[in-house]
Length: 398
Image (cartoon, rainbow, N blue to C red; front, top):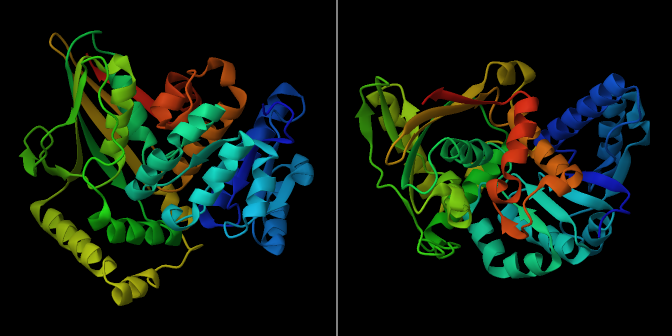
């Protein structure tokens, strides 16, 4: 349906902090691939946003990276202008959006992509938004053969694909238990802060288990009971991580038989000390309480405005590791997914490779459509792309 489209990938939100990092990654990738092959750029792409002047600035910056970006597409579109979203969706094979908070701004673009038959990737970590898309748009997207893939950044690719990588190292047909432990150092942008406030404000309105699909064929999929505890092997405290990641992992497990007949997953964050743990819990609790009240929520929004983010030096010092222990009846394995700056540099890489995977690797992807997780939509092919891009997937033990 999309073979005749003008662009393979459109980056919507390219004038924002994360969107510009995505554009820089694509410009560098296109330049390097063309130089190695002594051929035209390997994919056609465009930047999109609501400000023509700011888009012109981004395009000029991309031309400084890759002179071939002189022909880079520029599309004016706004989340508040449905007609502009329709036009944009009709021009690309995949629309990649960094425009959040998604609960406020994301649904009209999803609707436009489904109508246009265009695949979609985003960076949301907002459970309520994903639940809404599953409820309202999964069947429509599936009927149109469209992949709507949420959570294509640090939320939740290292965890979703890391668990998929882990279960493929275990024997087929056996019950599986996986625990993931996250360690990371990094900062956050204004856009991420705004989305976090939206998540905290919406958390009380979310029904437990919303968006979950029933297990099929007698298979069981469930979350491990989680608790704060001290891990002697790590010499550190671990606590349940309040993110969308375990929801995404469990959705993938419900869809894919490779996770075994009985699958359980626990998701934790490693903390250096008991004091750090107490401070972190108190801080999260305070933000959650303030985000639920209108006046204080607006004050929180002013802490960091959209478009602001960590410097290149801060990003260079940032890193992440997610270590998984997987156990079946007859085998134990330990794996790890790791990389650099989780929130921005690596997130830009993850979502860009997700969009390229859907645009260029269609013949190698699972024949699935609807509102999907990265593991269900792209699976091992996306792991291969991310490994080639420098994100490490390692088997440490077993």
